Length: 248
Figure 1 (cartoon, rainbow, N blue to C red):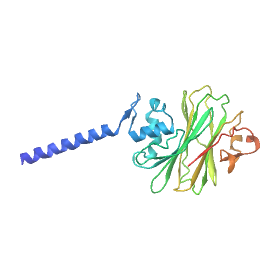
Figure 2: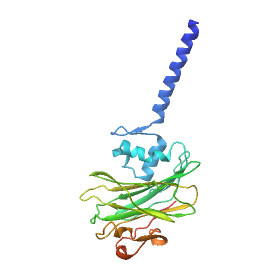
Figure 3: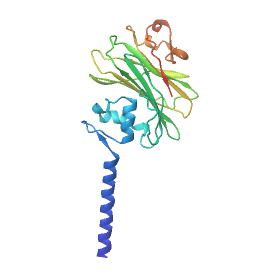
Figure 4: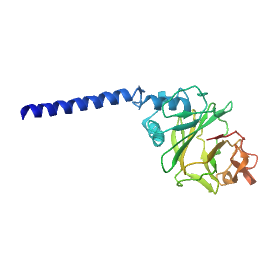
């Protein structure tokens, strides 16, 4: 009886040690904020956000991408870097993002059996002069929102602010965001959920002159719109910069 008990304790210790070793092996990258990433997660961060993003990544940033379930799902990216030769298990990557001298936009999507998680990222490469109401959103072809739960945040040297100035239309949506005054390193992130299938066209339009929040809603969603999404009219006509969009 005593030998059986000792054998049982030994087996429990072996399982416990093995679990800890697996966790240590599985988490292969850690930054100064204590954020740990697997190899797949680390490659995704570099491909989607850029090589410098991980160094300052916080736990809140990690939770933002958690819905993509990168370790277990196929993640489709339309991202800046040319990763056509990159080999990642269960991760499909393709295409460059749209980039200008001042900013770049990328989009990623992963799906489970009922819905797709979509993340759009806009990174400012310079510091914008005009800090008014920009618009970020998407147009749908062959799909639609799974829920109206759209989360949009603007991160910068002055912190993180969430925006819910959403305008819903039958074929897409837009969100107006106010760029922080005097801040640097501005990143705009948007996350939403769609039904499985179809194509998603994402766009970020920067206001080149000051515009009010109500006037920033003056748009329809159209393939012929700016970035393939926003067709501005009225007081918003001629205000936005016409940056190209991405699709997935």
